[in-house]
Length: 602
Image (cartoon, rainbow, N blue to C red; front, side, top):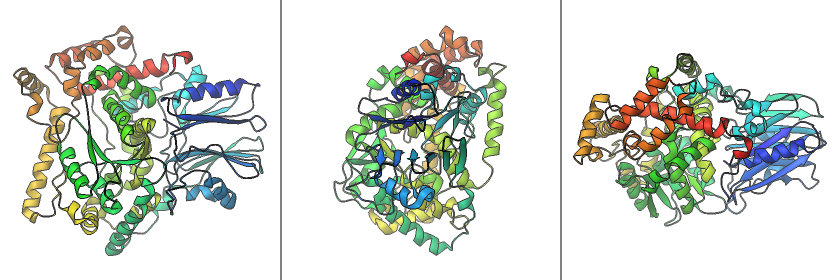
C-alpha cells in the first residue's frame, strides 16, 4: 500500500541509497502509484514514499519557506474545517512550526511521517494515535530501518527472513499478530501515538504523544446531553471524509453504519456514487443498499464476483498475501478483486467500517478454530499460546481494546489491502467521535438506539427501510422482535452453511449439489462461498499448493493430516475450509516473502 520507507543512520557512501531504492521498489504494487525520495547524508536520513495520485500526501516533500523544516507525510489528516479545494499535507509544516511537537496531538486520521528539523538537527518518526498507519521497524547495528510494509525490510536484510513462531501461532489462532509483534523475527511495529526522535546524531528517544488513558479517564455524560452531542458530532465530521481531489464513492450495506453516514451527510442528488460488493445473487446487503441509495437520490451499482475471479484466483491470492505481508488469508482474495474494480468508480472509498465497534460494542476480536491435528507437535504450543495471549490483551477498557488493539492489529491488514488499490476512509475513527464515545452513559453502546434515533431525525425515509438484521421502525414491539429473530436466524444459517457446516451435513450438501440444488437453499445474507469453492472451482489450485512437496515439508503442519483434509474436502465428504485456508495462507506467505530472493520481489 502507499506509505513510507526509510533508513536513519550514517553509513558507507551509496549503501543506504541503494537499500532505499530496493525498499521502495517493494511497495510499488501498482503502476499508477507516485513515488519519491529525500536524503540528507549529514543527518543520516534516507526517506522514500509512495502515494495515490492526487491524494492528500501527493505533494511530498513538504517544506517551509526557509527549507529548514522538511515533512514526509503518508496518509491523511482531517481538520475541523474541511476545505474541498486544497486538501493537501503542505499546510502541516506551518502547523508544526507554530506548535512544535504539540502539533502531533492535533492530527486526526491514519498517518505516519518523518519531520526533519534542521533548526535543532532533530529527526522525528511519528504515526497516528491508534497505530492504524502501520510502521514496521528493525533496530540494526548500522542503522534504524522502517517501512509501511515488512517486505521492504526483508528485501535489504536477508537475516530477517525468518518466521517468528509465536507471531505465526497468534496469526493462526487469533487472525492477527498481537502486542506489536510481527510474523518476522527481528521486526516489530511502531506503537500508536509514537514520536521517536534522533537529535544531533545522538541515540534514539522513544517518545509518545498520546495514551489511551487520556480518554479512559473522561467521565460519562448525561443521556440526553450525550445523544445531542453524538448527533451534532456526526453531522459535523461527515463532510470531512468526502473532500479532496477526484471522485469520492461510498460502499453501502444493509446495516446501520453506512445508513447513518448517508443520513448525516445528506448529499445532493447524484453527487455520491454508491456501490455494494456481491455475488450473482442479490443478497440482503444489495437489495437494502439499493433502496438506501434510491431514497438519497444517488446512483447505485453492484460490483459482482465474476467467473474471471476463479480463473485468476492464484493471482488474487498471491497478491493478497504479498501486499499484506502475510497478514491476510487467501479467503480474502475476493476483496482484492472487488477493490480493483471499485477504483474505476471512484479513487476514494468511504465506508461505515468500525461503526459497530465504536458507536456500539460489537466485537469480532476472538480466537478462531482449527483442528489441532493439522499442526505439527512442535508448532501446536504456539497456536495454543496465542489464545492465552489474546485473553490477556482483551482485558481492560472495552473501547480501548477495540480502537488501540483490535483495529491496528487485526483489522489493519484488510485496510492495507484496500488501500493498495484506493484511498480508504472511515469517519467512525475520527478523533472527535471516538473521544465522545468514551463519555457514553453506561449501557448506551450495548444498544443501537442512538444510531436509529439519529437516522429517524435526519432522514425518516432511510429510517423506514428495514436493515439486514431486521431492525424496523414501523413494526409494533412484538412484531419487531419476531422480525429481528427471523433475520438473525437467516444470518446464522448462512454462516453455518457457507463456513461452519458439520461434516455430516457437508456430505448432504454434496448430494444436493449433484441434483442441482446446493446453495439455492440459503445465501440471503452472505455470498463468500469458499467452502464450496475449495471443493469445486478452486480444488485444483488447493491440491497444487497444499500437496506440493514444499508445503508438506514445512515445520508447521502435520503432513498426513493435511493430505487427509485436502482429499476429504475436495471430495465433498468433510468441511475443512478453515484448515485449508490457514495452510494455504502460511504456504503462500512463505513463498512470497521468505523463499524469494530480493531480485524476485515484485
